Length: 67
Image (cartoon, rainbow, N blue to C red):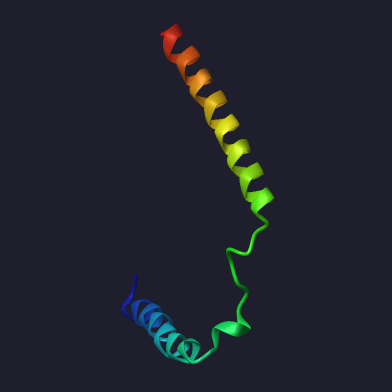
């Protein structure tokens, strides 16, 4: 990388600091809120995860048992 290219990269990176400062003043109410899921959907996702994990473990045992 040339010195000018390095300087451009540094300049672009430094732009993130003022952007971050401006975002500190944006109220939380303007942003979407995570974590308001329906409890039934959370339970269904947890059950799906456990099912996939069990299948993955069974497949791993089969593959390792064949070696």
